[in-house]
Figure 1: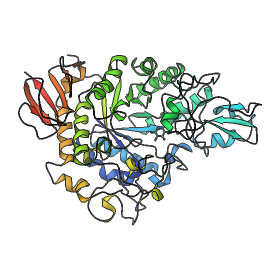
Figure 2 (figure 1 turned 90 degrees about the vertical axis):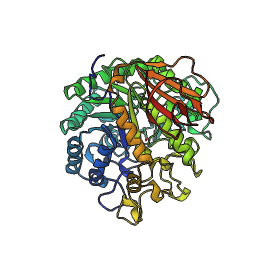
Figure 3 (figure 1 turned 180 degrees about the horizontal axis):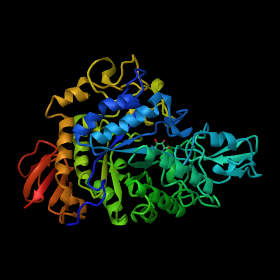
Length: 521
Ligand code: NOJ
């Protein structure tokens, strides 16, 4: 058996959505001082790597994913000293720190874009992507944005359109301009020199666009009234994302990262173009690990779960990251039915994710078994979504309940930036820490069991033959990961010692929705 080569190879990651993690300054918004005091919780849980969502100076149109200055901390979140303190404390506790870098676009308030708006001759104009307005009144091409609607906004002063795959306030950078590459080399080094252990690269799949900005082939009808992903899926994304030149950029970043033994973790968001994704991640000389998002887009159904693992595993030979929850999707407890049922299913999925080859991530609150918070329409803040309580991303972004009582240990303020969304005392870290059967303790035990299975790190996944129906079952060497996705109890498909179980089955019987880790033999 080959030893683990890199520090992330048998690790477990944890996403911190900074705005909702912990508020240390009493304004109802999470920040670095608050995070500092809560890092011990993550070390106790067994987390190896934290990923902190954007904290840079920002007008917050997309809650920090619109960066106005890549080397300044937004005052809402603290100072560079506060940041340094978090990195130092995390390291003391044995955890690595990834920060979220947002290279696809800047804020429209970034100095580069303010300059670019001064006109076509401005030296920063070419930091962004511009096209003349076609004479027939149409748009420069047919691309739709990730948030739905067209990707072009007219700059009336010059009569040119600029491109944005997200909000108009998030103009896309022109990664074909060497000055942009040079600028980001410096930004990466700025943070690496401050001690970060790597980057989660936002929108890694889309940074480079087709040189001629050709329209995408349309494969289904689309209009702006449709749900944003339906608009997106109406096109084959041949020219807007996953361009081959992006590999060159990540190779360049990889050389910088390697100087610091740092990790490049890509938000490689696509579920279709497997060969292009493979090129981005599996060489190990570009993005080290690319997230696969299939587990966020499936139902509680054995066939769908198998497919969500098998598709990337058969097409991407190395470097996969896994997550079932994030700040962008409804929490899996909610998606799988809510309440105790949803909790049981979400936990069983987590057991499987812990067995997949690659780097699994938890999202803050997942360890507590949280459902999405319920946000009344008037309290919604996400630029995406409408008044429907299920639309938009606010529900997954509500503040973490640390303790019972006003402010729930999250804040001393009378109100929070987003409401808690219906949390109870039983949801809190404090109450769950005192209850050995709590979701928190079960997740901690799961992480501890996995940590003890370093032997699987270099073992390929093998599906356990003859297992179909409601069982999802695979092995990594002598360790089997099995989930019963059906409504009836069933027998384990392997003999051996049960090292962990997520439900209340016993012996060789797996209860409905239960998962187990078994040492075969
Ligand atoms: C992906 C991030 O996870 C999401 O929150 C954000 O809105 C987009 N990228 C744009 O930066």
